Image 1 (tube, each protein chain N blue to C red):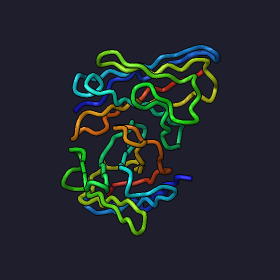
Image 2: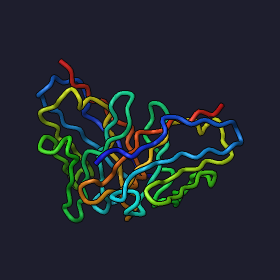
Image 3: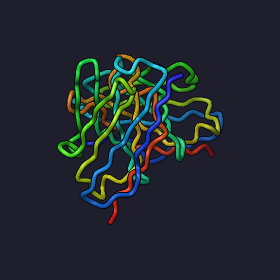
Image 4: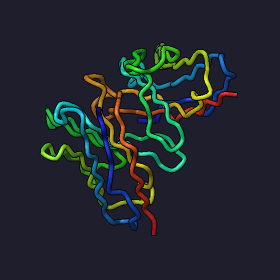
Length: 120
Length: 111
């Protein structure tokens, strides 16, 4: 069974850093693309970062480029998102998700979400 | 790249059919056959309902169907059931630097 479990969320002040983790199981981690998607309170979904470990391909949305860093730890079957210089508008629930095979923009498995609150 | 445009809300009675539209541009929906749809119940993670415009993942009822015409994609839910009440999001590939463009979401109410 495929499982994704996020951790690391919390309350931080503007300008501070936070690291999210996503522990995965039930599939060969390095064979799939992974993404982070966030959802501001009462708002829609926003893709923020993508990684395909097999090809070392990484992309970021403009809203987080230069501040967030996505990475994987194959030995630990874990995906991470290092978030620096956090802003109030980064507040939301952060989901990690796995692709659906070779298709683009389709994500078949999702974690339960981790709440990040940026507030002074 | 701007978010895809969806109606804020739609509604229908049990047993009826509803269609949710999702409008983009020739750079996203119109340019690729990579449109997906997600169902999200309050406080839960999104669930993939349709991918590649019209394909259903294993376990998704065939009451859910997808289509596309030009720059607009659509999700049709037939035989509405109370448990279909949720938020629905469309998503399209928009090229290497716009990997997943989401719509603003549509709240489906089953009357």
